[in-house]
Amino acid sequence: MRTTFKLILISFFLLLSFTDFAQNKATQTKPSKKKEILIQFSGVAVDHDSLKPIPFVSIMIKNSNRGTISDYFGYFSFVAEANDTIDFNALGYRKISYVIPDTLSTDKYSLIQVLKKDTFNLKEARIYSWPSKAEFEAAFLNYNSPNGDMERAKKNMALAQKKELLYGSKLDAQANFSNYMEDQNSKLYNAGQYPTISLLNPIAWAQFIEAWKNGQLKVQ
Image (tube, rainbow, N blue to C red):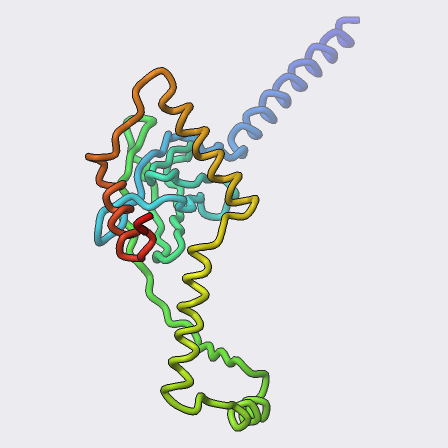
C-alpha cells in the first residue's frame, strides 16, 4: 500500500515539474510583440515658392490604405504610429515622404510639409480642322475669297444694320419675363423704405458709360 502511494506521489511531482518546464520554455521562445505607439499626426502642406497652403493633398501611410486628404487650407490630421513613413502626393508637385520619429515624448506631432512643384513636358498635340490633307487641299482650292474692299465693306455694313435692328426690336416673352422678375425683386428689396439712389453707385456709373459708348442711350 505504501509502495503504491509513493509511486503516485512521485508521478504527481514529475508531472508538475514537466508542466512548469514546458511553460517556461514556451515563454522563452515566444517572440515579444512590439508595442505600438499611436501618434496624432497633424500639420499643413504648403508650396515651396509662395508658402501658400496646398489643398487636397493625398497623405497616406506607406504600404497601407490608411491616411487622409488635406482640406482647402492645406491642414490635415490623422492617427499614425511612430516610425511610420508618410507619403505626400499632390497634382503638379513632387512626391515626398516623411518618417515619424520613434523618440517622441508625447502622443502628438505637428509638421509643416513643403512641396516643390514638378515640371514635365507633354507630347505635342496637333489639331487639324480637316480629316485628311486631301480634303484640306480641295477646300483650300475651292475657297471663294471676297473680290475686294467693296465686297468686305458691304458685309460689314450688313452686320451693322442687323445690330441696329436688334437694338430697336421689342423684347420676346423670355426677356419680358426676366425684366418683370428683376423689377419685382427690386421692389421687394426696397419694401418699407425709400428706393436706393444710384447717383453715387460706381457700378451704375460704369454701366451708364458702357451703354453710352455702345450707343444704347437714345434721346426720345
